[in-house]
Length: 129
Image (cartoon, rainbow, N blue to C red; front, side):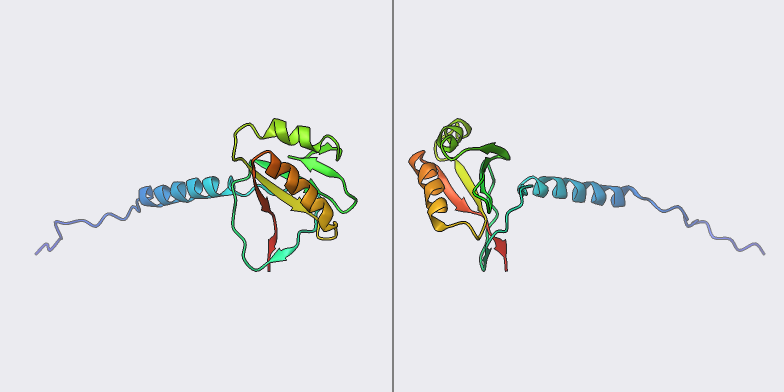
C-alpha cells in the first residue's frame, strides 16, 4: 500500500517580507538622519535637562577663542550681521546657536540680538545630560 501525501510542503523561504522591512527601515533612518545636522567645529556645548530637535536652517558657531562661523563658513564679528542677512532668505527663519560653554554670555547676547533683529527664531544648541 502506497501512502503518500497529496499536499507537499514547500521548503523554500520567501524573503519578500524581509526585504520590505529592510527598505522601510532604510527610509526611516534616511529621513530622521537629515533632521540632525552635527557641527564639525570644535565646540564644547553646555548640557541641558530638556532638549528638542530643531530643523536647522542657519547655524552660528562661536568657538572658545571667539571665532565666528555661519554654516561652517568663517566670518568676522563685523561681517556676521551681513552674512546672517544673506542666509536668512525667509522671514521667521531659524538660527541655531552653537556657543562654547566657556564663551562669555555677552557674545551669546550679541549674536542672538542680530538674529532677533532679522526676525529669526533663535535656538541654543545643547547636549543632553
